[in-house]
Image 1 (cartoon, rainbow, N blue to C red):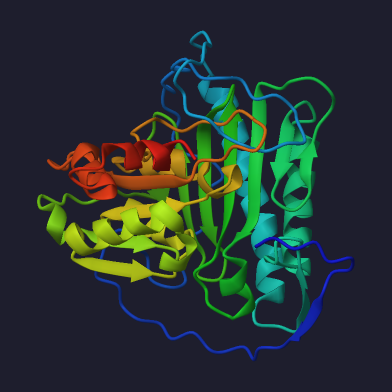
Image 2: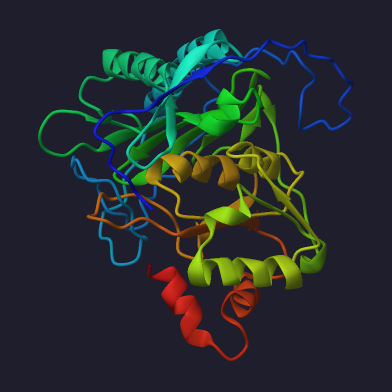
Amino acid sequence: MLSSPSLPRHRAHALNPSSHRRHANPNPNLNPFPPLRIPSSTTPRRLRARADRIGAPRRSPVSGSETARGSNVDATEVSDGEMDRMLEVANRAADVAGEVLRKYFRQRFDIIDKEDLSPVTIADREAEESMVSIILESFPSHAVFGEENGWRCKEGSADYVWVLDPIDGTKSFITGKPLFGTLIALLYKGEPIVGIIDQPVLRERWVGVRGRRTILNGREISTRPCSILSQAYLYTTSPHLFSGDAEEAFIRVRNKVVKVPLYGCDCYAYALLASGFVDLVIESGLKPYDFLSLVPVIEGAGGKITDWKGNKLHWRPLLNHTPQVLMWWRREMPWSINRLWMHFSGPNNCNTINYLINF
């Protein structure tokens, strides 16, 4: 249930720093600690210039999302030079956010409960402000939407919209678990064209650009094949985040489809999928700043990311509407989303999945 306390509640918090042990990592998709330095840009390639009938986001104080069906935007093209400049700024934004988060990680600070009882810290707010400053200094005409402070833009509409989540996984951050991350997305007319997942403590950064291969610390990565659905490794943030019919559907998938369910990685689970360690991620109730940055990262690594009905993801602000469930898997897997729907809805209950999709 939501609550609206008259004053924020503060909790004192203190964690002692711990040392990091270095281990050899035989998987080429992940670098040992410390990793390579993040480049400001990648080798230019022609960006596939297709808007795929997406909807242009409007500058609105209300956040939300809808699928791409029914949108109507002409194909556009972003030059390599423009893309590389925006990618450089995105990396700089991740750099400054990382400096802030490393300063506060496993240190003493206050935790404030927001109206929905989700936690926020000075680190969230300071990291978001640092990113906004970098972006608007370089692109004053762009719009920016952040989890903590909402819209930063002039009146009207913008072709380019930055969507920021300074700490995806604040509970992990405040409890000293380095599986949180900073999420940065750049949208062009509603479609994610740049996405960054940055883990500042482990110094790992996944960078996705539409039409290019996803890179981790300067190295191209890819998802892995999974020929048998029952052998897939599944991640979700927590089974407790599903409720009602969504919870029942997730339990069916977990019990009948997936061999090994895993929990508690926040955005790091998506990074593991892009790196070829996880086969499937299913989530419910995500906000635009939770998923938009993931689209270029997952697709550039050879995966697929959609809502439960298989629709592609973009963002147009709509009143009181957010996608309830998203899923990720490798494109070449012989099993399809249709087979997953059978487990979501049950063999004799086709209406259930329609209800789940259209929350």
